[in-house]
Length: 123
Image 1 (tube, rainbow, N blue to C red):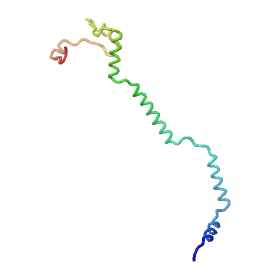
Image 2 (cartoon, rainbow, N blue to C red; image 1 turned 135 degrees about the horizontal axis):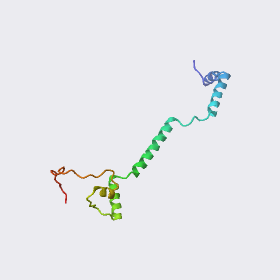
Image 3 (spheres, one colour; image 1 turned 90 degrees about the vertical axis):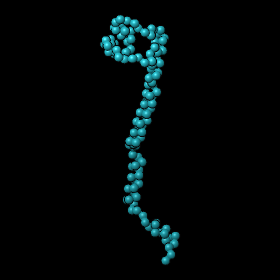
Image 4 (tube, rainbow, N blue to C red; image 1 turned 90 degrees about the horizontal axis):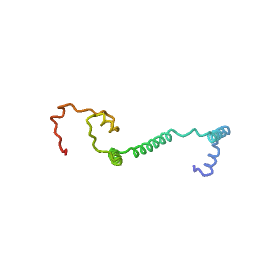
């Protein structure tokens, strides 16, 4: 038996949902369309946090001076102050007062402590 296009068309036209099912499906679609957005999905929030920390970290790394920059800055400051490069004093408290940028206390070396040491490359 050969099936014609008309037979197929008639078969599918007769396959219909009941009206109450159609109304229910349409109502679900309307409710979904009217529902407010539930906010950003967690992936978007996580991506935003990662981007924020990347930007802040980049700014921090760009602003943090290197050791070479810090040393050069200290040398230039002392040069512009025209301060003496060497401080001579018989008292360590005078040296500490002249060099306030150090965060340690100066103390005299113990006698004999460096007696077996040799300076290499010093002038």
